[in-house]
Length: 227
Image (cartoon, rainbow, N blue to C red; front, side, top):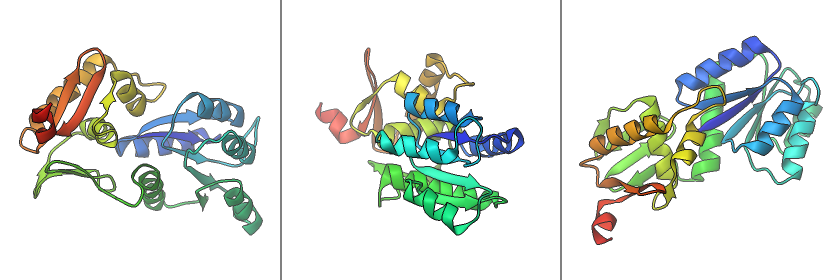
């Protein structure tokens, strides 16, 4: 899952980046409104955390432009503006949630999970394939009653494949979902993660197929045998 932090306070942005990265998210950072507006046009994000008091372009204008051009990226406003009229305006412009500073990091991370879950999973919290089940809130993978031990990167790769179950996913799509602009992930690393996942999913009823020249496809073992 890829998140864009739009915040002109470098210390706060760094703290949020560290916390969310440790939770397995790929995080990009924009320090002003113009940069944020451009990044929201050039890349696909699962969530943006938006400050309102930004240099070069107000956060409300960034939000307005995003929604005007049809952008559906979930927006969590995080701002020092706590007046009711600011809250109402932000939500009316298309924000999905609104938090004021100072804030509790645990609560913010819970809201981040909820917004991403709502955007990606709809009303169904868990994803499954065969006996494999993924809980996006707990970031836990299970095979039946057994919890599978996986690194944050392995879980993130599996999540991308589960979201596109039955469809071919290219290495480029996986890298785009996992990498921020400052931390490129190479194709060789993707191959390593796929290799590890295949071994861990051997008894799950889920199989990752390589579609030569195109990418990878996650499907149930029964469907794989029928092809």
